Image 1 (tube, helix red, strand yellow):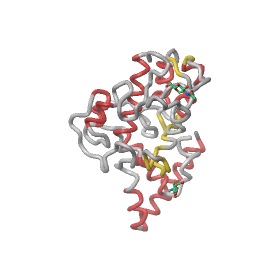
Image 2 (cartoon, rainbow, N blue to C red):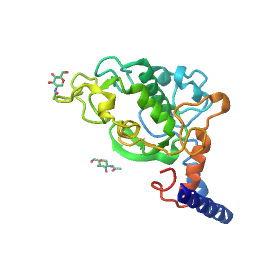
Image 3 (cartoon, rainbow, N blue to C red):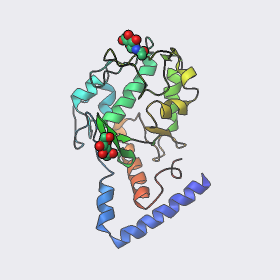
Length: 245
Ligand SMILES: *[C@@H]1O[C@H](CO)[C@@H](O)[C@H](O)[C@H]1NC(C)=O
Ligand SMILES: *[C@@H]1O[C@H](CO)[C@@H](O)[C@H](O)[C@H]1NC(C)=O
């Protein structure tokens, strides 16, 4: 922590220096990390207001990468968005399911994930998110609320049997509790989607980690977080391993 803080100070110092020399290239590049939508299956090209975002996605109404239709669809079991069935091992507890819905809302709707967007060569999307620093409490609560639900896999991106058109447990993958496939909060939040998230040491409200849950009456706290990491990256920071590790 002490060292990370010192490094952060150094980065901010060099950022100020870089800004002083006013290089148009760095300004342009930084713009590309803030207020952007990733190039994936359902994202809008540009973020903008969406007055009718549904239920758990409503915090993003003022500025979103998802449409109202997407926001509604992603609340359904086995939505037509990805034909992905959360209940592949029987009923998922509602207290657990709400976290998966919120995870979907953040993924589809957030315009604040620019610093973690990476290009991928996948048939269904050109970009993904990698190592988004998820606030530790959001991950811990997700894990707590899901430990008694059931699954058969520890990475939900790959390895399903898609023969029926909907993900089913592959041969030999037994249904067991979440806790048995995900022994720790980090195993869940980082393993589930191939490291889309990295569990942050920072807490909700710190301005240094992305919140999956927030009260939009206080604005969107992830705007500040994206600004912080975008500035640090543009200042020449290693993108992983120091800040927020
Ligand atoms: C993606 O994969 C295809 C087929 O393997 C290849 O032709 C193409 O160059 C790849 N694109 C990138 C950006 O890696
Ligand atoms: C995939 O699921 C289908 C049923 O939908 C089943 O008939 C088939 O044996 C499964 N294949 C494997 C490799 O598990």
